[in-house]
Length: 104
Image (cartoon, rainbow, N blue to C red; front, side, top):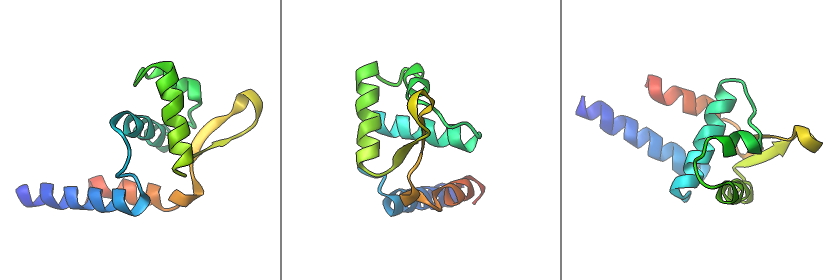
């Protein structure tokens, strides 16, 4: 059991380092996690969807989204009021590796 936990932790930290996620603040990580889980469920969240999660204040949530965009982790897709958030092309392969971790 302990060996499994250590192995899982090792896989997760390797994945985070590989894709540049280790430097995120706690709330930025929570916003990123929400976006990843939403996309995994087939829904591309909007900024308002993220705000509705009440991870942080509205202003802080917008700053966290901007920080994730500046870090190259997420992008906006669509146009006008139909803007949604998606993972950056920089993270190609993240989804497949992310799904493998819990099953490992």
